[in-house]
Structure formats: C-alpha cells, structure tokens
View 1 (spheres, rainbow, N blue to C red):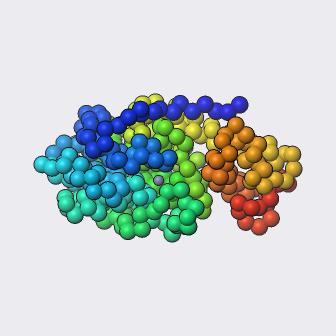
View 2 (tube, rainbow, N blue to C red):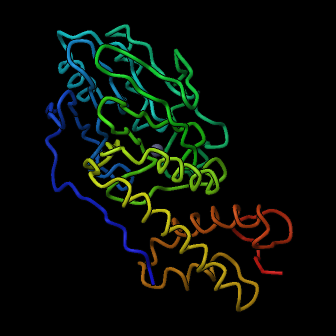
View 3 (tube, rainbow, N blue to C red):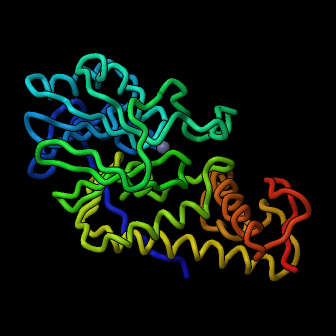
Length: 300
Ligand SMILES: [Zn+2]
C-alpha cells in the first residue's frame, strides 16, 4: 500500500508583499511559480533591526527590490544560502552589494549537478560564499542564531538552517510541505538524502519547518517520517519488480507508476535511478557495469 504523505498547500500568495509568518519572521515570495518552485521562492527575513535573510532568491529585479524595500531601514547581517539552484542563491549578489552583508553557504555549485539539459533545476554557477559553513557551524546575530545542518541529497551543497531561538528549521528544498523532493543523479544522492531525513529526527523538539517553497510545516516530524517511509516503499517496490526477473528502469516504472500520468514517467525514472544507484551501491541489487538509465537490473 502506498504511503500517504501529509502534504500542506498554500492556495495563493501575494508576490512582493512582506508577510509576517511568526514573531520575528517575515517572508517575501518571488513571482517565479513553477513545477519545482510551487508558488515561488519564499525569501525569509529573520529578526528585527539587525536581520538575517534566508535564500535571497532568483535574479529577479522586482523580487530583489521587494526584499531590499522590506529591510530598508534595517541592517542586514547575514545572507544564508541553502543551496545553489537558481531559484535560491542568485539574488544574494545584488542584496550583498546593496547591504554589505556576507553570504553564508556550503560552497559553489557542484560540477556534477551540471546543466546538461536533463537537470530539472538549473545551477547558479556564479555563487561563491563569503563564508563557507559546514555541519554544526553556528551563525549568530542579535536575537537569532542558526545551526547549520548539512543535508545533501537534493544537491550535494545543501544546508538547512536551524533557528535555535524559535525551534524551527529553514529546510530549503530538503523538506517541502507541498511535494516530495527531487533527488537527481549524479550529484543528487539517495543514500545521502535518506541520511539527511534521519538527521532531522535528531532534533525532536523542533516545532516548525519553513521550506523555501510552500507554507510552513507545523507537524514536521510526521512529514519527515512519511517522506522516509515513502522512499522505503519505493525501494520495496523495486525489489518486488526484480523478484520477477531482470528488468530495466522503463519496465519497473511502468509497474511502479501505473497510476501516474505517462508524462511523469521520465522524472519517475530518474528517481528510480537514484534508488538503484543506492541499492547497487550497497549490494541489494546488481547490474553489469554502472547503474545507468539503460542498464538491466537484477537480484542475485
Ligand atoms: Zn533546489
């Protein structure tokens, strides 16, 4: 039986408006809705007077203007970048120039997540953090402090920022309330993604997640458990398919995604590939040579 995931939705947003999401937390949404960005990129402003900005967003003049207007008479102390997809980091350049704030992030765009035309989300090849952060680093300002949670999977340079005073996490694209996260090989890594899901369970007292896309998640642990169970269910389905004999990904997708529209079978195939890379890596599944989209997979 398929796992049911407690998704949360956001019927509409007011682009460019500054909306208070919680005490000391404002959000401005960029007008870049899409199949990977949902209603658009949510840029968060944390604190009052001396603030931090999480994911400044796409290189969009209207959005940058709206974000800068929101912090017009304030001091921006830090730009916190979750990862280098183009809907997250590019605006940091203009916001940094206007405010003098340093940009924090894990590192530049990973070469393996390249623009080969197949990658679902395109990379920001210009971004370089002023301050590189790793797991466990803390970025502090007046009234706020962020613990950096290294959360690879969606992309190898993903950091979630845990706002300790609020017991909440800015989860970027690692956890989104409205959709599962894409884990695109070769840079996207299912083994890492599953470990990054488990990591969040180590903070059971966290009360809310603020993803970059979509509404706040107010029952975060139930969502994380369901997302995890959903991925394990996909692995179980793969093993079931292979119990009938050697198969290609195309054959498995036809069975596993029988109830899903055919136009979604291509992204589904990439997700199955991500699982198979993990499962051939740990020996649960075999293939001759590399785990590729065209390979034949089997169980010994
Ligand atoms: Zn992304």
